[in-house]
Image (cartoon, rainbow, N blue to C red; front, side):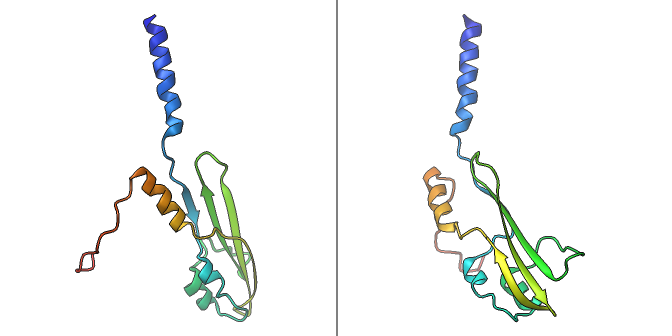
Length: 129
């Protein structure tokens, strides 16, 4: 009887792990829409780097293109991968295509506040800390 009770109790405890909050995991270049919309043909590499940052991996065989790769994993869903590619000709942007994750900051903040794991913003320290 004790063994059955112990087995049931452990099964309930292990199954409860699915109820725990799982934080979304983002990796790679998370690009902001306002910066991607500023891309224009003819921009220099330095201007693109200022807007979007450097790509995570430089491909020595394709130096005329930069790939901005980002992944998102939310709860137990499969990992979603998005790639924005910028092509250069003579060190100037010739075209770009692909996808990027939209800005999720507000939605993530609302969701995280439900669980109470983020302190509310208070007036920042006047010393700039």
